[in-house]
Image (cartoon, rainbow, N blue to C red):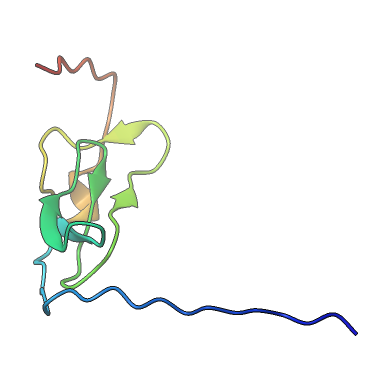
Length: 78
């Protein structure tokens, strides 16, 4: 019978409650804005949600799926 060596590692982060439109970056323990093309409607989440195919947001930190708009988007990143 094989033996298993299981190690559990817990990373400590102070309790951070990120607001809608942001997510918790678990590596840094900080709240980050959702990028263009993503949104987050709930507080205290660890990722943002992709807009449906063919839609995008026009701003970062979007907190509502209704901000995912249809169309052709050309964004310049500086």
